Length: 158
Image (tube, rainbow, N blue to C red; front, side):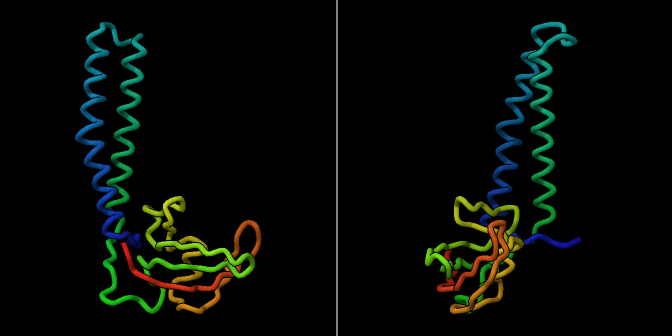
């Protein structure tokens, strides 16, 4: 089985979510089920059915998070600032067609979030830039066609 890379922060976030679901959400759902049972006959109790459905969804989410955590391998940051793009690097790219600059942090697939500026190492851009240096040009196939970028900065900042 291939291990899936993840940053320490990403792993800690997933673990914190498991803990929150188990310690906060699970007791709420259990209480909702108990409250619905106190209302009498559960065979035709919509409140009971809804609470049981919430419980099933919650347990599924907890199990999914545990599965993800078991597949992960925490990749520690490099000891020195990287000269090449590595997992965990923050990379500034300049779109060669528009001149627009974008900045992404390269993380694992379970923690990537484009809105917060993180992309997966397995994404098309991630695969294109890994191992490259400042000044290198890369091409990325995107739904709108091929995009060309130049790597203008590499840093390692959390």
